[in-house]
Amino acid sequence: MSEGFAARTVAAANGVAQDAAFGAVIAPIHLSTTFKFPAFEQAGPYDYSRLGNPTRDALADTIAKLEGGARAVMVASGMAALDLALSSLRPGDLLVAPHDCYGGTHRLLSFRAARGHYRVAFVDQTDPDARAAALAEGPKVVLIETPSNPLMRVVDIRRITADAKAAGALAVVDNTFLSPALQQPIALGADLVVHSTTKFLNGHSDVIGGVVVAADKAVGEELAAWANTIGVTGSPLDAYLTLRGLRTLFVRVEQQQRNAAVLAAFLEAHPAVARVHYPGPATDPGHALA
Ligand SMILES: Cc1ncc(COP(=O)(O)O)c(C=O)c1O
Image (cartoon, rainbow, N blue to C red; front, side):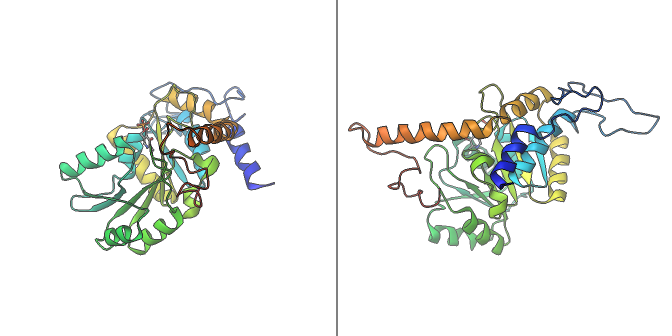
């Protein structure tokens, strides 16, 4: 069985027919906030939905498998996922982030830095000298977003994560734009992967959501505990919808790529268009990495 085939099977069928109560084929939506203890002072697998919820776990488990991670934490938005992934940073710690990251990410990091929660250096990660200079400052975390939103700039995850680790930094990759259907940053060296599941993973424009996937189980457990502590875990209904959307991830992404290639070619040839930001055509600087 090819790896691609296995990943498609995970997307389409992970967690199907696992319901112990009634044999439901599709993982039920567990909206209950609270769960009964089987006996006095004996908790079952779940007790309170902010901490843990079976529907949320069904989604998190599927995304963790698709990303090749050990543990995923589903949260209320992509921004919450980024904030959670960066929650190990302390006052004075340096975060290196892409200068062309998503605008909301830029705002989050700038506002956190302005409040003294950590320091941030926005760096053009396509520039090896700028990267080396930033790493020489001893960052605790290097954030990568590739392709970037909205300029679709592509950087080399393998190279940047290797350099980040050599410098003693944690490597966090925002994989929103390619999704695990096309890119698995953990296999390329990332410690954490974040997503705005609002985009390709859910794919139906009806849920704001996010996820953090940890390569290391213990790190994932710590993040899950912190997500519970600050109360950013996602809702079971959102988890259900996102898992339902995820079932068709591969077929959607494949069709979207075909559509995007046609659109990009049309725009490239259009006399009114000065520049197309799309790493598909060989003329784009990110093409070789995409
Ligand atoms: C690359 C990227 N990361 C994070 C986010 C934030 O996600 P959300 O809107 O789900 O909070 C977005 C949103 O557009 C994004 O494009």
